[in-house]
Image 1 (cartoon, rainbow over the protein chains, first blue to last red):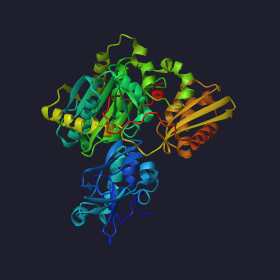
Image 2: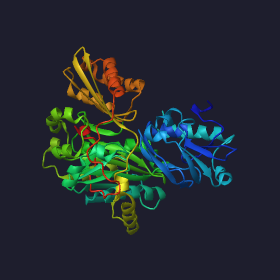
Image 3: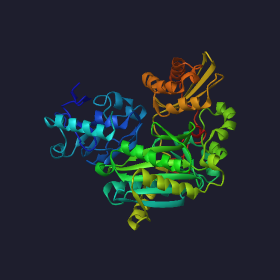
Length: 148
Length: 382
């Protein structure tokens, strides 16, 4: 586990500052998994339901790719990347609890074939910038009352 | 006073599809800066039944009854349970731009103020109300309003509440499929007497518009903001009509199904104070509601407090215990006959044994036209 400011943020992932989604690219296949980061989940609470896009559907960065209902709110899932969905975590449709218990593992949402990884990943947070961003986000979430 | 003003929209006789499309459209447009922050106080045409975002319509509603009585059925963008809405239930929808935190703060802070606006409104009517877990507004332990948040991808936030000015309990029980129907039969007679509405407290002649005015004042005070009466703009009306056509007016939206199973479980245990029966409804691993009955002695309000604390709650034993402990601390000796650990064990037994309910007779064709309802499991208003 790689912890920053008390929250688990694995360093081999890229994070979307706006949606608190993560993206993890397989360099060999170029396919990229997408999920929700730990801080985003803290703001949502326990998930009750999730709706995900169909395999083969095209998603655009910043657009809704699904919906979820959690303890604290219902919200649209905003994609951090553009691409075509090649795999969907169907187990979550029946039991979304892995998203809360294992957000970077069995709680992944979809895998996509990105259409512009070089361009769009530049907008995501990764590498050395991660520490400062996570620390600032934790502070902001505390100030706004999302987390205790 | 804050130098910004919110638009105030008043709407009555609203059709279910239009009402829901209007709220979602406003959330998106306010988030994008295309519409001003808006407080909408409205009522639906009697009656409609609205299920929560992910509920299965046929599991929540008596669809044959709705069809026969012209009760519109639809699906909210917000979560939670099924409710009936009509001329005597005040819909409250506040839409604000969630990303402008300097002006409005975060969603959770907003929820507290949103709750505060409603509570101040009731105080103005002379009613002392309290919030439970920031989502249910209660009077003497009985729910009188349910609150929900929807966050649009634009960042726009929709805060939704339905306030019971009055309620046709008999109709509600015919529209909603009450869990444990056979067992619930013996309880139905007491539902009306246990339901709190503003008119049951303040008198049958309480004008709907007095409540609406008080709610507007409550929000103006809670947010320290002016309210400017307004109308839909032409572009808003166009966007609402488009969303109604593409979503809220379609069977694909109304009759969509979730794969998370609805489950029902029950247990019966002997306590120092007598027999305890626990009935639980679950959405997968999540507790939707628990119902406690038996011949043990405890004040009705304390039992309602226990039940209310577990609505839409994690099924994790430690989380259940952590939630119930403060309720026991609050009621002290009143719950002596019902030890905490005995209750936790009974709840866990009920949830572990939970099974899918019998399938309703009628499973609608998703391509069929929606015909109308807005709803929370009826027992939540009990």
